[in-house]
Image (cartoon, rainbow over all chains, first blue to last red; front, side, top):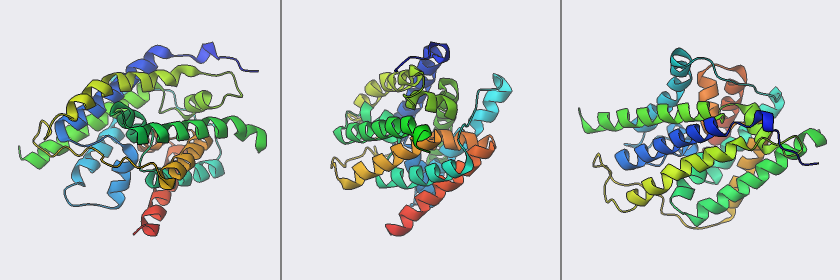
Length: 143
Length: 140
């Protein structure tokens, strides 16, 4: 039966964090003219293009500094990874290959694409959300 | 400062803000993500608010961006131009969604978790980079 886990419900931090993600995407597009799509940024580092390498490296380093600065300034944050190693490897391969094949992930299609009112990104977002819900909901019942 | 240096500093700052957004929102916590995606367990709807908050700022930001010829730093506005809905888009999104549902990581949180040296983050990002590498070899 479908129930809501109200004890785990954290709408305010989720909304505030979401505003920061939006702020970052808006900063990047308005200041530099580049789209904050993380799979594209990371993938672009593996396949460097002239003039498009340094900003991508810098963006990833900024993200990498985030947990360290957060711990130094605010404190620890919750991190719990419930899946085993084999599941993580399979998941990583699917996410890496799938985001490149589909030209985007939660940030590129989900945040930036929907904000641009792109139908292509809306469809991609619908597909990865539905597959994510179906796979996560079935996983523990089929293996 | 030289223009390419200002470009890198601005994008580094954006990366930092993005990472903080992932951490504060709970997106960087795979257990939270799975609590959102797994409807067979008592459901945690929190992460809907992440998308809502991001798009609330993204809508006016990109509305403005579409009307600018160049970015505020004078760089060309590189907005995506592809509008085709094809098999690659649908299959890629489906594979990504499946991997997201299995692991609880999408690419941004993977970078944050790997950078904080969490073992599972390192395992996931190694596999993710391998998946990206396989794609670029197959599509050379």
